[in-house]
Image (tube, rainbow, N blue to C red; front, side, top):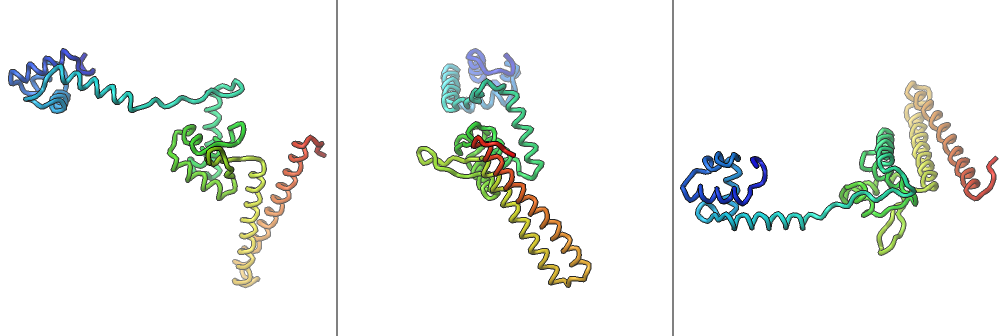
Length: 242
């Protein structure tokens, strides 16, 4: 049919047209095809003097078969465990990723983080992540490096020397501690500025107020993180939380 793949009958008409000395455009009009289609067909299969309909048809079928063999089907998503709704999980994963992006994570890092959080064992290999997210190993590596620098992911040994990347409750605690340390550094540098600029100057007063605010936040965050860790560990061990 016009616009579809050339049939063996189409190729026989092309061969007859060439034998009669017709131009490519004239052959194309007779087959209701673009001239470029006829030009590519002829040049790919021996040129105007060597074109043979049967040989061209066989060669095209062989090329098509090779492409099918060389392009393995990408595996579909694995069935969700515990009877979960696949569509609902995927939609939730996308919303979760958006929230993580809005908190400041680049998209690729957010996708890796969410993928790890949504696995039941909280652990995946680089190959698992690349297949699950349909991204390159380089993208996974870059995301993991960034997440490690933020104390959000931990590397653990896996089978066949494959590292696994893990998220768990302790990592969230460690991430909070890293945030506190960053705040303490800001407090220190602000207080240093008070001395450099002169304690009674407007800029120094501003810096002192910043230091007091961040110092209070850092102390509160540290206390809350420690309390949450203690309570959750007690609950996980089967004890009663007061």
